[in-house]
Image 1 (cartoon, rainbow, N blue to C red):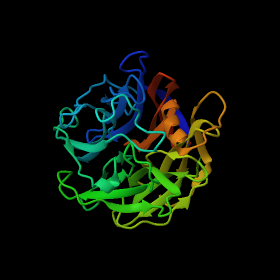
Image 2 (cartoon, rainbow, N blue to C red; image 1 turned 135 degrees about the vertical axis):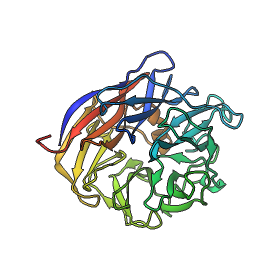
Image 3 (cartoon, one colour; image 1 turned 30 degrees about the horizontal axis):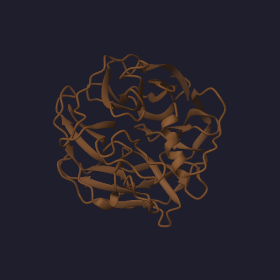
Image 4 (spheres, one colour; image 1 turned 120 degrees about the vertical axis):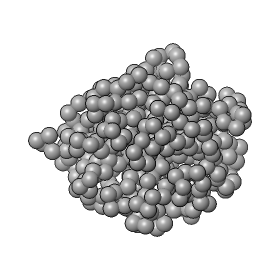
Length: 375
C-alpha cells in the first residue's frame, strides 16, 4: 500500500467563521462523484459550528466550492452541528445524520464539563435528499430515552442487507451530573429509511464502568457483516488502550468479543473493498503523533504491519501530563490533528480524509492510497 496523492479539501481561514474544520467524511454517490461533509466554525467547540458539503467529480483529486444547506437551530433553540456523515440509500437518495448541540442550555460553556465529565444537551438529527444532496428535507430528531443521556453520534447510518438502517449512539452524562459514568453503545434500527426508529438497545458496555468504548467506527461488508473499531479508554488508568474490533453477523443484534488490534488509539471509519480487504487509518496522538493506515486481507484478518503507511506526521513530541478523565476530555479541544475517515473508491483505491493544522487554524486534508504496487 502506498500514498499516490495528497492535498487539501478545505483550507482554513484563520480568524473567521471558517477557521477550524473537523469531522470530515466521504460518501461515494451513484453517479461516481464523491460528497464530503465536515464541521466548520471559528473554533473546534464554538457556538457557530455548521456543516459544509463539497463535491468531487474526479475521484477526490479536486473539490468544488462549499455549501451550507442545513439549519443550525432546531426546535426553536440555537445550536451547532458537530458532525454530519452521509449514507447513500440507492440512486440519488441520501440520508444525513448530524450531531446537534444545544447552545442555549449553558450559554458559553464547553461541550465537555471537566468537573463532572458530563456533556451539553445534544440530539441526533436526520434529513433526506432525493437529488444527490442538492436539496434536503427539514431536520427531524431521532428519539432517545433519558437513560442514554446526551447522545453522541460517532459513525454514519448503516445500510443493512435487509434494507433497514442502523444508528450507533454513545451514551453520556448530563452536564451537571457528578455520578459515576457508565458509558455504553446503543443501536436503534429503522425499517422506513429513518422516518421511525426502534427503542435503542445496548450492544457494547463494560458493566464495571472502567472501560469506555468510544467513537465506534463501523462499516458493512458485501456479505452484510458489521465491522466496528473502537477507541478504548481506561478510566482507572486514565489512559487510552489499543483499538479493538468487533464483528456482527446479524445486523448488530449480537457481536463477537473485542479483539485487541495491537495499536492505539482512535480508529477511522474503515474502507471496505468489494473483495473483502479493509483499510483502517488511525490517529496516535500520544506516541508517534501521526495518522497511519494498514491493510487487512479480510474484515476479520490481522492488519499487516508491512502495509503500514504514514499519512500525516505532526511536528513536536508526544506524551501528556493529564491526570483526570475530565482533563482528557477538555484536552480534546486542544488537539490539532486527527479524525481520519477512510472510504473505498469506485476505481479500487482508498481515500482518507482528516483534519490538521495548528491552534485556531485547521483544515481538511486528503490522502489517496493505492493498494497494489502496480496501481
